[in-house]
Amino acid sequence: MAYYKPQEIAEITVENGVKKVHNSLLTVLVLGFMAGAYIALGFLLDIRIISSAPAEWGSIVNLVGAAVFPLGLVLVLLAGGELLTGNMMAVPIAWLSRRITIAEMCKNLILITISNFLGALFVAYFFGHVAGLTSSGAYLDKLIAMAGHKIDDSFLQAFISGIGCNWLVALAVWLCYGSDSMGGKIVGIWFPTMAFVAIGFQHVVANMFLIPAAIFEGYYNWGDYLANFVPVWLGNLVGGSVFVAVAYWSAYLKNKDKKTAL
Image (cartoon, rainbow, N blue to C red; front, side):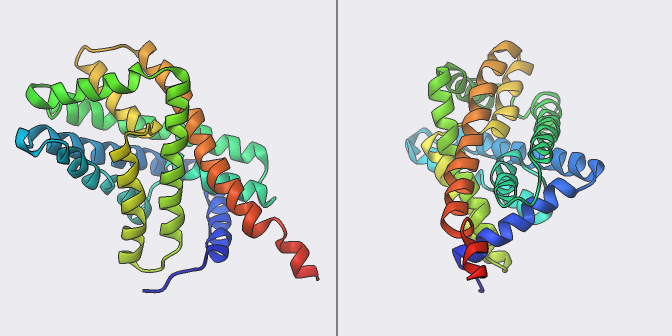
């Protein structure tokens, strides 16, 4: 199972960031929709499992739910998708390396935000509400409780939680880029993603499914969602772009051209 050194992962990530902003509009929108739907499906799986688990399992139920959630990110990275939280790391490091413009970076993040939202909303409405997978019984109770916990956070709490979340999610993407085997990529994705879910950090795309799904069942409103979306989006941006992209660019790429010249 071959893997790359951190310096090599940084270079691979830059190339991926460049590719992301140069995709056609249709490609960006389709892959963004798919990624939003995949993350929502992972969250739906999480809710279905933890809601039906025996009460005797206690807190271990949360660990089980966290262990199945990464399915969504595995599908994004291996089947194909453009996920906002991953792009918040890969695209900024390409910009830091002067391979893309800031306008291209901002355009990509805006388009992916919109398309991820549409994909997550599709799953929340048609699978959660219309198909009834989160509309009644223990599933609805868990959905409402989880959405309530997200909404109840203050702006600062949601922002900081967003930082922690995308620090881990961006590392999951980073580790995926660090392996050239399917098994290695899955392992690299799984554990950081499971960690953020088990800890309870806030993921902007996961919330695009969770909170609207609760709204479709008559709980909360779009104002509540927007008040959560803004700090979590900003926190996720800081977590991915600063704690991963800037950190590893500074460590591995900032002086690369200077050293090559010497």
